[in-house]
Amino acid sequence: MNSVGVVTPQRVTFGAPITLKGGVTLPGFELVYETYGELNAEGSNAVLVCHALSGSHHVAGIYADEPKNVGWWDNLVGPGKPLDTNRFFVVGVNNLGGCYGSTGPMSLNPASGKPYGADFPVVTVEDWVAAQARLADHLGINCWAAVVGGSLGGMQAMEWTLQFPDRIRHALVIASAPKLSAQNIAFNELARQAILSDPDFHGGHYYEHGVVPVNGLRLARMVGHITYLSDDQMGEKFGRELKNDKLSYGYGVDFQIESYLRYQGDRFTTYFDANTYLITTKALDYFDPARDYEGDLQAALARAKANFFVASFSTDWRFAPERSQEIVYALMHNGRDVSYAEIECSAGHDSFLLDDAHYHAVLGAYLDRIET
Image (cartoon, rainbow, N blue to C red; front, side):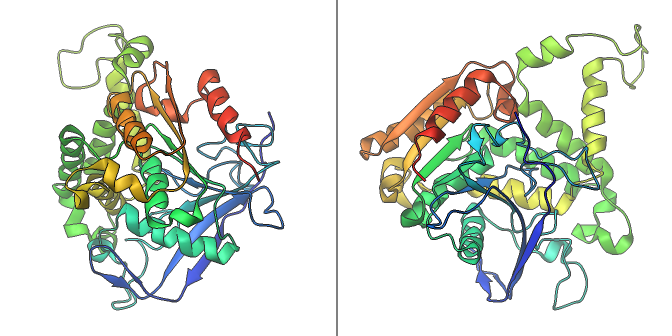
């Protein structure tokens, strides 16, 4: 199938202040985004793709000067693909607090002239959706045909149906949950402590010291990556294979899985920001639309008017199928139109990123039903 080809990021500046859920007001902000396909005359074929923890606005295609930098959902978005850019106008955006160009900890604080660092406020899923609504206004989109996301992106799709129920027709919530479990919060806290305890963190103002908390960020990514994979997949890919065919009887790399995790951790530190990691994991922890409804998810989702597609993966133990089913049951009890698929896939949580034929067929079939 064809790619959308060479793409160019765009930037928009919003001069009006935005007050975040935590009470802090930003005087203005910038968002970096990409678009694929053409917006029709009615503005009715627009689809927002929301990214997960380490994702970005670069959803599909390549950059002219970086042909190996392929969009993180390129297997899903493009001409003739499940999210078909011959039909849809697809928008990807880097969220507030991100490290790919949108206003975040690496941006200059107008009050000090220095990077925000730790002074950048914690943002929430609700804040991201509020900022995305301003981008929709800028693009002339009154109502999304669909908002699509996996993991943390799925939480944003859910939030769209609650915060702006009249501006979204379909929500596609993939490998997600209505809130994090205590175990998930624990994994996030372990990752944050790895960063916070790194001597090079400098209270979040490491930019001014010309350093990066490499060791903490590396360990955080290793912890996270373990939770994204299934035991089956790790067994299939690595088993107990040795790196050098013999044991070292030391604390270096003996097993292939150790080598893989260290590689992933090292690579992550070259392109992701530690402060953004802290912010994003907190946004994950805080999301809980039922909190203001005494834990009643059905009551929380009663505002939603959109149709839903919910998908889970059999070996995803971080966002298990049971969590998706909680969303489905609450929507059904509210009389909403909801489709649900549990995909048999051995890849764990990362399955939503992969080119699985069954998954793409089911997703594509739902998207084909959406009128533009």
